[in-house]
Image (cartoon, rainbow, N blue to C red):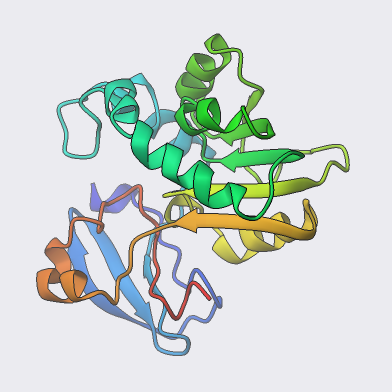
Length: 222
């Protein structure tokens, strides 16, 4: 397995090759940049990785620790969480357009459509097909290569998504390009500098390898 892993061999955030190995887990290296302090998975996945990994088995118990037992059921159990996120975003205004990056099957979009014209994007063809069955406006693809025909969005959301992207810096630059002046960008991700992460070390639950490619702290996310 180790021989099939294509390494990145540079910091995923600042691109320097000056980094140190923190630990190895299931054949993958978790490293820390010696220049900017960013923690990342030393893995350079290609497009086929995403299409194969985020298949139906990922969302419906593949028998591995990486998968969901039943994603749709778990998403429904988060109705209150999604409602709270919608309420928080409405404080900055409503109406206009919202794009949910990493929308999966569209559970958050279903709650947001009452207040915005919603769009979604995800790398999983399986998830996008389910979202389309809910009559949601979604596209299968990567944010960096998806064209929006000069459309600008008033709200951009990335719920537990930024840690999955191959190039977080370019992703944030792309978000800047598709937003208006005064647009809201909301995201959630783990905190590698948290007390829980430091106490658990390499057994921290958000060292979810190989799908989590970046491990942000409060400092690196800003």
